[in-house]
Image (cartoon, rainbow, N blue to C red; front, side, top):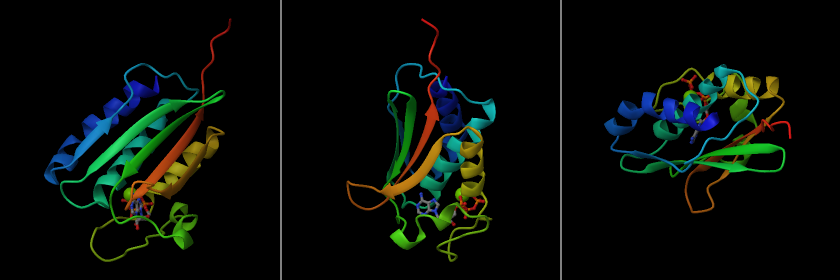
Amino acid sequence: NVTSIIEHSTEILTTHASNKEMDIEFNAKEPHYVLANPIIETVFTNLISNAIKYSPEKSKVVVDVKEEEEFTEITVTDFGEGIKDEHKSTVFDRFKRVNKTGVRGSGLGLAIVKRTIELHKGDVGVRDNPEGQGSVFFVKLKRYLEEP
Ligand code: ATP
Ligand code: MG
């Protein structure tokens, strides 16, 4: 149930968010079942903690879950500094850091996200936030479809 996994990773990041007076808005109300190892939680923890880290104080992070035919798409939207088009594919590389000044990090988070999603035969990527500044990271995982 990816809903409760995401709820758990947002709980873990509450202090991180409240230190910056940020809200994490999570819009899934019902369980969404996907085919995944419990290790998948690290994907959401990495994406949501990046969203907090690379955003200004008092902004927000929005997490949505949407079911498609075969996949469930989870999006993490922020209103932060955003990622330029030329960096959109390389941010998933090991040790890649775009803005080296300011916030600390090892540049491994997104590489772990990408590898974990690959092992699940899912999909991950980033696009611009259509509402203005910031990014939308999306993850697609195979839905768990019960036998009829
Ligand atoms: P680590 O996660 O290992 O502590 P990190 O956050 O620097 O370090 P990644 O999570 O792999 O590393 O992210 C790689 C780079 O992509 C970051 O250094 C940052 O420049 C950029 N980035 C990641 N997420 C965002 C985001 N939500 N908004 C803007 N830039 C981002
Ligand atoms: Mg990170």
